[in-house]
Amino acid sequence: MGDIVMSNEEINQVEIFERLKRREIKQGKAAKVLGLSVRQIKRKLRKYKIDGAKSLVHKSRGRTSNNKISQKELDKAITLIRDKYWDFGPTLAHEKLDENHDFKISLSSVRKEMVRTGIWKPRKRRKVDSHQLRERRVCFGELLQLDGSPHDWFEGRGPKCNLNVGVDDATNTYSIKFSKTETTQDYFKLLEEYINQYGLLLAIYVDKHSIFRVNNQSNLDLKKPSKFNKYEGLTQFGRACKELGIELIFAHSPQAKGRVEKVNSTFQDRLVKEMRLEGISSIEEANKFVPGYMKKFNKMFSKKPRSSVDMHRKLNKNIDLSNILCVKDTRTLSKNLTFQYDNIIFQIKTKRSAFTLRKTRVTILERYDGSIRILDYRNKILEYETIKLLPSIKTTTAKELNAKLDDILVREAKKNYKKKNPWESNYEELTKDNYFYKPSGAV
Image (cartoon, rainbow, N blue to C red):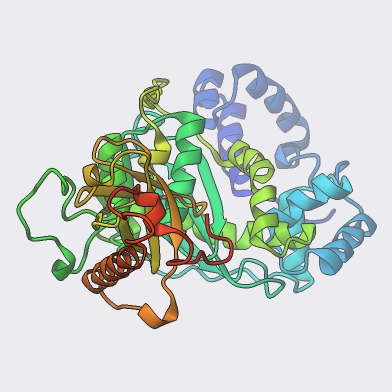
């Protein structure tokens, strides 16, 4: 008779059943010690009296499992992984085998085979500095973590770009958007889509990037607050959040907003591979692919909040997001109702007397799609056209520009004095296309 291989648990049972056999302890006490029922103890004791310690050994030991996957099936799976998913981790490779090829293999089996064949090597875990854990927020909509992730998302098939990522702190619900670089306008676009989908949230958790916070004190406006400067010391993003009643919280370290930092690395692994399988190589294609992918991603990784209360606020009908989620700037109109912005000269068109708008402040609203609106001091939209100075009268400052425009208008008015009194004509007749010309594509 060969040696009996017993586990530690079974070896410990031998002493108990020997004492039961000698009637030194009762069956109820033995059941408590071994964590079994009295009925199980009786059945095992009967077998122990006949076969001894051998009866305590599990009957399936040494036998092949009925559910064991054949090596032929494992070899097919490994061949597929080597051909199509060679740089996938075991978890993602297992998902793809199940979704796309209907392989019913356990994750542990896939991992073992990938390690055995050398496709994947387990990483050694680095010793991580311990940080005090911050408890998740209780309700959905309480806090949104926001961050950008520049990366070679198309693996050389297209230019490197940036992924803006937002994650709800309570539920792990993700919102993402691709952009060329990490800019204020791109965050406005992501935030507008989020607000339209869920509503106004309570707070946003961000790093100390210059998009969110003014880090250089010399950039601060040190003048006294005025009706034209309600949001001094704030970036455009900070100003928009204040207008919407959203608190902006700044993290002192990457670990503080670890949820969004961690998911960046997850996207750099999973999303990159998904886009490779779909043949995506541009930002436009990626942004079309994202909504469908995120539905599946959020279904897999989102969590239930501790509270069922949704803290998102409904957007007031009187609030126009296009007037808030934009880059705002102010200018003072010249005598000619012109101003310069972003190396372009804007000419205000009005049917009223020009004197009512001279030297008044206007607000420029520039949206992420490039559209520009101009509001007067009563927040009414002004019509305008873009004009470009001739090369011979290009200037460097707004003061010089206004002086040049005044000289041109006065000179042309004197030329036409005999034909028609220029002061009796309206303003539009003095600013015809013979003094200015529009650039190609101008509004």
